[in-house]
Image (tube, rainbow, N blue to C red; front, side, top):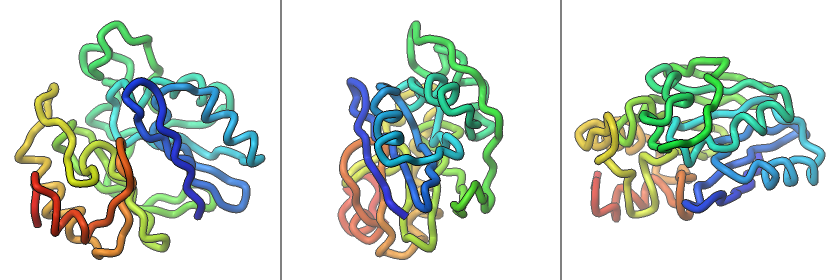
Length: 203
């Protein structure tokens, strides 16, 4: 599985395009829809779905444009299904309205096109934060729950530092050390690296 990272918008939120066999999944298209579309077209890919780690505005800003361009469905955890269309909840101020997701994510194994992965609920930064685990490829897409040597903010609406610690220690840190973490902002890291060196939540 190939992974293209596109840091988008003023907060440089990582949008990930996962692709193999000409099919693609789009994770967190937060801004600059034209850049997402340009990459997909350059590789002659066929997008299958948009996966959202959570509904904060910097992760969903380009959702509607990309969704309508490719006529594909959006997946988001039930705890934030209404947030995506409600600026006071998604921290966007006067951010434009975004349509609600077609599919609700729960903790489960999921297959979309040629991609099979596990969805785990990892609240803390937000109540509906999820991480996507691709076991065969040893890759995790953690949204804003876990960064390289950092964690997501817990001073936002319905954030919880206690829930974030639990998500890391009881869920992500239980994965093998060699799994690569693709965070919502910044560079990649690994589970082993964070267990040893993350100053906010050591193992």
